[in-house]
Picture 1: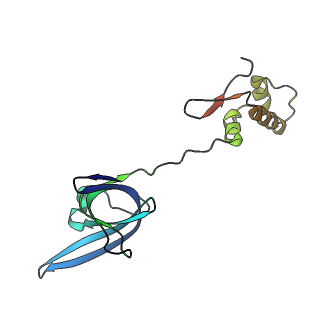
Picture 2 (picture 1 turned 90 degrees about the vertical axis):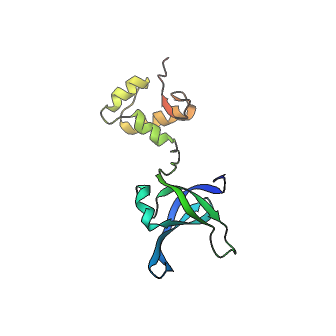
Picture 3 (picture 1 turned 90 degrees about the horizontal axis):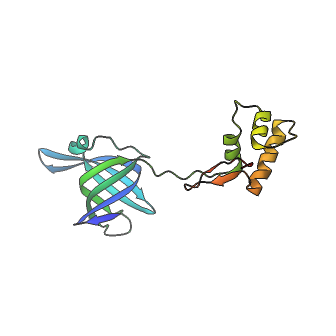
Length: 165
């Protein structure tokens, strides 16, 4: 959440969309779309003028991550969410991805490709007396536990290292 000269920028996921209208004058009705956006544990209502929705380049949908810049109006009581109106920027962003967990099983899948036979893999790794794929996987897991064949790169990913070198 960034504040700048009376404007605020938030990034969050759309959890609810409502359409509405308000009659301003006898011959003018203001149409709007209200988005309920979750930012961490806080909720904000984002009010978008339906006449300007084409300027943003996308139609907001539930589950999309958005970045909104506009004026913040605090709620007068705890029943209502703070609202953002006078939108100057609304854009669709990619959801933050969680880092995948590196497990022995994921390393085994990388280290034992399906196009190689278990005897080829065993000979490359310097493992002897392997009768079937199940025993090979067990020996690889033992080596992983001892951390003799896997190293961690700067990005935190494990990769294959020749045990003979």
